[in-house]
Image (cartoon, rainbow, N blue to C red):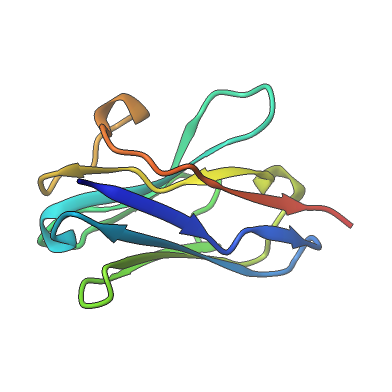
Length: 124
């Protein structure tokens, strides 16, 4: 059974940093593409970053490029999202969905497995 559990969210001031973690179980992380999506109140869910299976190629949305870094530790079955230079616009619930295969999909509909999310609030 595929399970994903996000953690690491919280309240942070603008300009600060947070590291989100996604602990996975029920599948071999190395063979799955896994991403980070976020959903702010009243807005649609949007892709933030993704790391492909096998080759571990990384992708970033323009809004976070240069500030966020995705990584994974296959031995620990955990994916991370290091978020630096946080902005109020980064406030959202963050999810780490996954799909079998090496390709990161273009949108959330391509990810069949989702965790419950972790809330990130950036405010002074």
